[in-house]
Amino acid sequence: MNEYDEKADIFLKKHGIKLSIRRGDYKEPLWGRESDGHFGDHYRIVVTRKDGKRISFSFWGSIADMQEGKDPRPYDILACMSSDSSMPTDPDEVQQEFGGNIKQALATVKFAERLQGFFTEEELTDLREIQ
Image 1: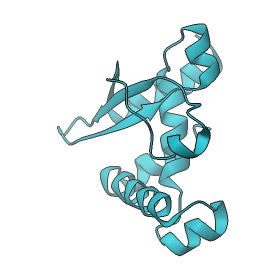
Image 2: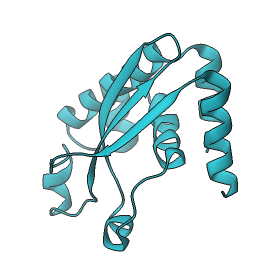
Image 3: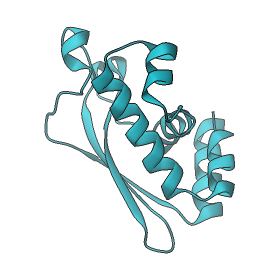
């Protein structure tokens, strides 16, 4: 176990969170058409808190991991969730900061709001320290 795996393990144990990572059916990401079809494998993620509250979403691994036949680790998922949970919740701000079309900005905002509503403030603080 490396230091990144340890960070993920500590976060999950501290907050009683379970993470399920399973290969999904092939699905193109929202941004797939703009990437000339270059994206990694699709996974279905389910995060379950000790109170039974759950959130699920699609995740795409990296192209390099796909080429090496590697599945994402909990750290990979949590690091992305950390970043996504810190995103602005105003679509115009997302577009200004990151570019892209309004559909992408709205999807980014919706997911940030879902993560912010799912985790407690303490969990969000700890999640954002994972990176």
